[in-house]
View 1 (cartoon, rainbow, N blue to C red):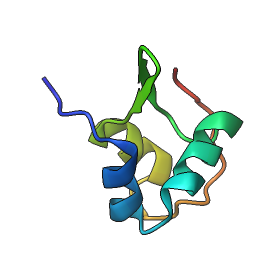
View 2: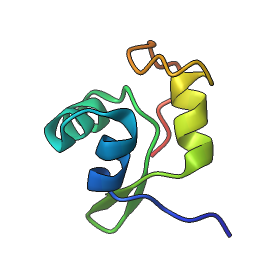
View 3: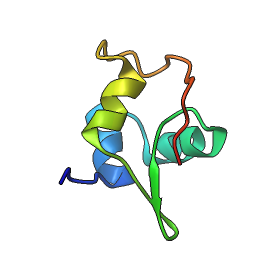
Length: 65
């Protein structure tokens, strides 16, 4: 089972503010999983988001919910 990351953890990894993560979630730009009202991320989802290149501004084509 893969570990879920919290918004604050992901923000630290991507070196952005947590509010940026929430904005990307709301816009459907970053793949995420909702557990009730909580937003969580897996490293596999984030690898797809950054396309392995660390480009966090890459346009999203698959916004998983």
